[in-house]
Image: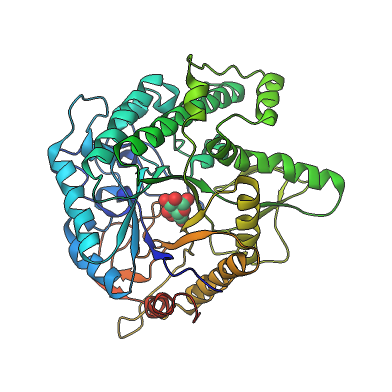
Length: 477
Ligand code: BG6
């Protein structure tokens, strides 16, 4: 009973949100380097290159590029046995389409991964976490088939280089998130599409489907190639799992929720079954989407089935067949309505621990693959007390209530969960808003949205609580 002995406990971050050092050691600009800081309810802007006088928080991150050894020592002290981060593609291929990689970038990750291992943490590495070289985004991101080749070269290079250091790999972070991203609110999709104000909604969606197909091909090649490089590699996909509940048992509500869940399920369906589901093919036909597939693409997808499914889980949503189409920072869902039974964070993310167990059951029973929760956490406004301490009891309550549900999924439902990594185990730049003040960390970083502060680190109360959770393998919550 309880968590398996080899359960992976740790934290998760992404290169562009913490490394900083955006233009050193040969790194090229990534799409995140032209994203300005936004605010709660205020979208980030994507600029045409880096512009004088604008605030680009990802240029700074929390300077982990220079502080990783000390930060990793804090993670080790908390007892992490794994650590999830991503590789900044433009450190390795500055423009993305070079033939040869940047050795300084490769060297950096070699040192980083060996530091994790030296401190007892198994690296869990995302190949592309919401970023690509800016040059590739300007080529159309994954709508452009050439970007598939560039990604494969990048993935092959790093998997070859780190084949003795990294076992766990994830392809595209929250690949399904782009289904929410066809609104002007998001500056770009995670497949690298920068919005074109002159494109019709149908054209925008056509581009997204094309990018998604190309990403499926790219991910499948990465899975196959990775297994050739090292048969011990365990390679997973990564989904943003936000269950969509019907607001009532009115049949139209139930049907609407099922239709909308397909935007989530289809990614796992393809990654685990190796083929496009019938409901998607029907939708493409019905809505007039014409996906350009090269000969052999479907066989490639068939041959690239993942070893496990990883997910982020933050919240659930609800829809009503009588609700209006909602365009918000987080969702673009027809009929989105608030769920009156649960509370939301200051950023409107609805807190629903039971939804995590529900999601784990749905995913496992549909896909029959081990699951890895690689993001879960809560963004909050926080200040230090007069002693410089953050007593983040509500974060502890959030994490406890979610981990309890993971335990139930394992014990009661028989779901094979491989691990759990808290999102933003250290305060980092928020992806959605670019703020530092939307804090997820178990470790506080003294920095504000404009980059002022000492950048000193200090452990919050939650870090001691989580340390005990890990030490007792989830027995004491
Ligand atoms: C996930 C992303 O969507 O949620 C992370 O994978 C992101 O990159 C996290 O930071 C929390 O979102 P936000 O917008 O609050 O930073």
